[in-house]
View 1 (tube, helix red, strand yellow):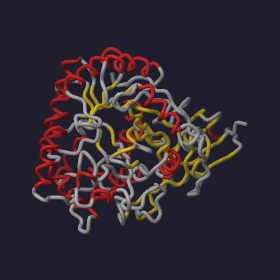
View 2 (cartoon, one colour):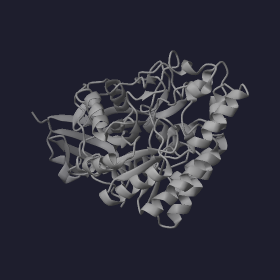
View 3 (tube, one colour):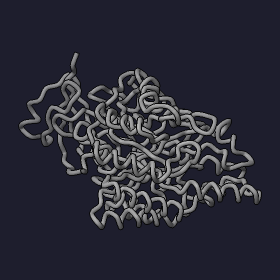
View 4 (cartoon, one colour):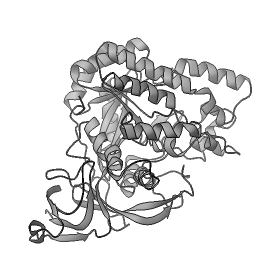
Length: 466
């Protein structure tokens, strides 16, 4: 039975507007928006009225880069689709786009079906998939067309991880050419993995085994070089390009130069690169292993370039690359050899809050917060205006956000299935109060009221910036 819900008295913030307005929800969608106190809003009736006085009413976050249950380095990411999407909801994110993985020697279809099976009936919020290409050949190139047809419209390739996910320049070019013809967006992990492997081997031979050496061998210049090469390959193919988890000033410069030429090149960064640094990788007693991810954390001075890129739109999206591994029993696999530390950080629950703190710190505006966390990822990956905004006809994925509540981020209180927080002890202002997913209360005044299986698979159209 459909419940009419009325959200009254909040400040509605989208990427385009900020307005004191009431929002009427019917059949899981936004039915109407009207200025608070206006004649139109005064006559609305509802089964349930939510008082949003003193709160922001914002679109649910769209996290376009997560890895639930990802097998990596002899273990698996510790969040399931159930625990991970529940944590996402707690953090004000109502849609994730996760990565289905093709294994070498297997078809895209097998990989995608495996991920459908992991997620189906288990998600608390809505989800979609990108496809990781690990084995580009005639068969998989043809399959790309079929996947675009069923709403999996983006494909990730790796210039890193030889022997696991790595594709050479010829394979990358062929995938890009296919994307140019079928409308699929190529996403790139841009690091020169062949050169990095040489530096890893040399570091270990010198007895440099601590977590901090992970950051030292994955050099800034090898991220910049790979970013440059990916852009040139995309130009040759006549294809758009989305570079994931950009961490370094030099890589941002490559994206900016391409965009200045008018090329359809896009960049994403993540909260860990905006708020953490190599200082964390250097924490003693192997604690630095908690912060091992790829691309790696950079020296603090790179943060200013990333914030500037977000303000100038040379970087368009902030996603988490949420890929959690517990410190005990998982990160510890790399004691004595940093190259065996599983790569990845938890963060799906923290992104919206950290970016609100960035608003208070003066890095970005409120509307830019919503743009980089909700609207642009939805547009980039063919989900807008169903997701990423509050407008008549949009899914009623809505967050009531208390901009004055103070909190301390901690593993003691987070909902991600991982035994540490990358932001342990960080004091921030702003907190999710209530979350609706397609009009259904998932978080009700800081109480989880959602359920596994509410979240639905969302087929996507192609990139809306092309």
